[in-house]
Length: 156
Image (cartoon, rainbow, N blue to C red; front, top):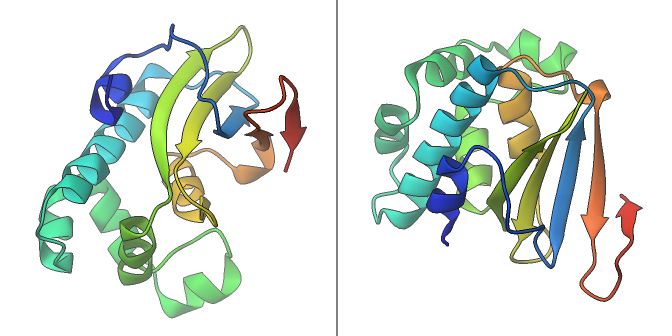
C-alpha cells in the first residue's frame, strides 16, 4: 500500500510503521478537520510525485483555504507567532520532507497520526503547521519516535 492509499483510508488497520513518528493529538480530530488535513496531504503527495515543483503550481494544487490562510500572513504575524509560516518557506520545507503519511488511529478521546520517516534529519515543522492551519494548537500534541529495534515508543 503506498502513501496515497494509506491517506485515503480513514483508519489504519495494518499496524504502525517500523520507523517513524506517532503524533498524538489530545482530542479527537473531527471529520471536518480530518477532511481538510486529508485534502492538504493529498495535494502534497501529488506534488511530490509531480516533476513540476514551481511555487505557482504548488499554489494552484494546494487547497485554496490553505493558500489564502498562508499567503495572508504578514511579517508582523510571523514575528509574533512562531507557529506561522511564510508560504514560500513552507513550500521549500515541504519539498524536502523526509517523512510520509502512514495512517491515523482514532481512540476514545484522542487521535494518533503516524508518519513514516524516510530520512534523517526529518523536519516535521511543516506538518505541525498543517495541523495548526486546521485549528489544532501544538500545545495539545505530543510526539513519540518509533524505533525498529524496540517495541517501546520514546518521547522526542
